[in-house]
Length: 362
Image 1 (cartoon, one colour):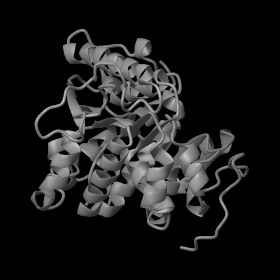
Image 2: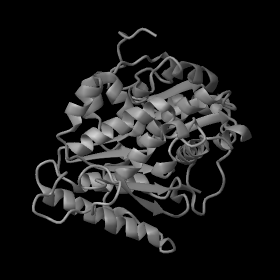
Image 3: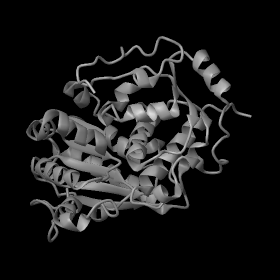
């Protein structure tokens, strides 16, 4: 794909039913940095708007721990990493990272228990400079800026929040381990969410034993907090809504200003030509996503790209009108049994939630 194509104007899609697959956006490094903030869905997230499940004490405990963590960063002054003259939030422990032990919190739990809400609440509670991004966005930033410039851009921050922390290949393991070590040494506090404990990252995806030292190094940066519970997006709700007909999807694309319209297989093919760091820009100005002919995802590479797109659509709260198969049937049994199972389940949870947004209340 050419690197010098121009992004669609930020004002959005003007022609009714314009296709996402016709867009080839570019994203500047400056935009990548400027967008390191919580997505619109979590722009108003605060600790007091998080509703812990009374049956899951770990949720209320996570709020208390994160509020304390936010207070320790704010009290520390400077970039917050070394609160001079005050008791360290984490005590030094044998084998821990750096002179002060772990410098961050790691929220581990299933999808839909509110980890991103809590991470965004922490970000909002701490004065800047600070950054918030998904793991994919962080690695994309390093790719766009180069490692040294990325370290320079982030090392003056009080806090770096990393959502959806996953390691999909050995190169990412070494890259992120080195980056976080450099930032921790510079005094940056760290917070992350994941569906996988830090010492289990990469398990089932690559020969993680070959990179055990790097993975253990990552784990040493964090105090892990387990958050239990059910997916809040689907508590007490029926299964995925029935798909629309092609005609209903096309009518929605015509009716809704700023809606896109794509054939699902065509969009999947197009995603292979757009770097995942640009999937957010792909959705600039889009008010709703309309998809004809949703079908099983053919392979793992395509499935992982769809996971990223689903995350960006969910961040932007875009309703999804779709015909074909219900979204909870697009990933085959083999995919759901493999090393990326948790990613696929998160994507299904979010896609189903977005399709429910299009169903009128009874």
